[in-house]
Image (cartoon, rainbow, N blue to C red; front, side, top):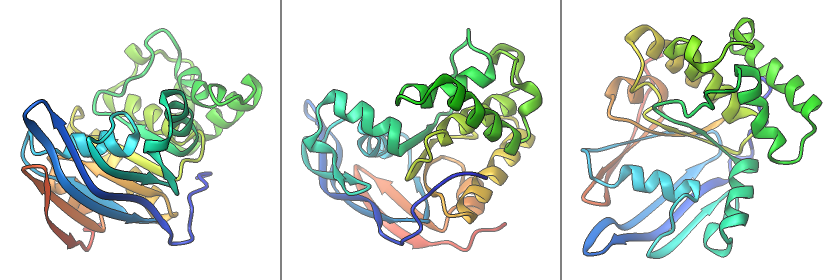
Length: 236
C-alpha cells in the first residue's frame, strides 16, 4: 500500500475546549481530544450526541463556536473557506457511508480527480489511481461506473480516492453502514491493513464490531461531551 502517513508519533488532531451551537442547541460542549499519528480511534455514541459534528470539525467542514481545532499542526480556524478546501485535499482523506462517488465518472477517474484538484497532472493522477485500485484488488473494475459496482466495490473506490494524496489523517463516517455483512468485513479488513502500515484513522460508527476490530482507542460521546475514553485490544 503506497500511503505516506506520518509515523513520527506526533499529535495529528487536537481539539481544545471545542463548543458548537446551533441556535439554542449545543452540539458540542467543551470537547477536548488528541489523536496521535498511527492511532485508530473510534467515536461512538447515540444519535444526536455530537459525534458527526465532531468529525465535521476535524474535517474543516464546520467551524466551532469557540475553541480550537488543529490538524497536522494547522489551526483550522485561521484558514478561510478556500484555504480549508485546499488543506482538506492535501492532508485529509474522507470515506462516507454512501460513498459520494461521481456517477458519470468511471472508477479510475473518480479516484484520479482527487489528485488533479491539487494540481497533479492527469497522467500522474491516473497512474497513482491505478496503483491504488490494484492494491485494493479492484483494478479490474477501473472502467466501471458507480452504478455498475457493488456496495463493497464502491467503498473500495472511495477508499482509494481518500488515499490519493497520501493524507496525514483518514476520516471514516459510518464506512460500513450501507454495506452487507460480507462487504462490511472486507472494508474492516482494509481499514485494519491501512492502520497496520501507519495510517492514522478516525472512525465514527454505530457498529461496536467495527470499533472492536479496527480501533485501538474508543471515544464515547454523550450530550456533546467526551463521556469516556478507553483503550481497545482490536479483535483482528
